[in-house]
Image 1 (cartoon, rainbow, N blue to C red):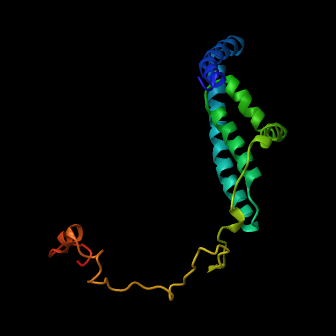
Image 2 (cartoon, rainbow, N blue to C red):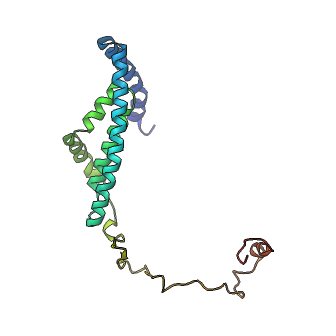
Image 3 (tube, rainbow, N blue to C red):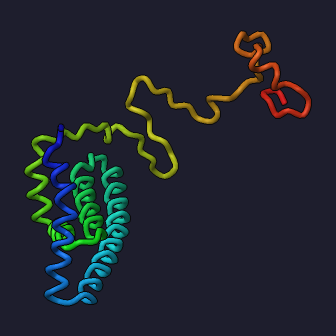
Amino acid sequence: MRFPLLSFFVILMPILEIAGFIVVGKAIGVWATLALVILSAFAGLIILRAIGLGMFRKLSASRQSGVAPADEIVQGVMLGLAGVLLFLPGFITDVIGLLLLLPFVRKAIWSKFAANIVVASNFSQSRQWSGGARSQSSRPDVVDLDDTDFHRQDPNEKSPWRKGPDIDHLDGPGNNGPRG
């Protein structure tokens, strides 16, 4: 098996969450336990919504400045994971989700894994739109045409691509085929 730790985690986590429900339920009561689970689920949904909107704004700002948004993406993914973990019922996932909400924990996790992750991007070479005018592409294999530079012509009747058994049957009356 390729990921024995992950499969062990998937099997062990529900057992630990059930044990957590039992321990917390005995300590504070059934209704208070259910209230905590429901409140954490709502908190997770609120965080997911806020993170989605905030991440969109940060990515847009990074795009306008021409900087690759690797850090914003990683932070947004970890905050999104925190929201998902808070949404899932269970106190262990809630604790992990709350820890991911802390900026120093996210930075520690990112510094641990950043050396093993390569962010490859041509983000700064992407097209920039400013004031409705397109900027010239920096890629030599791209031909940037305006509406006046390109227009469609009527199909060439002598073209070998125009005639054939697949096209001719679409030309009947009342049919919205290529000529219809």
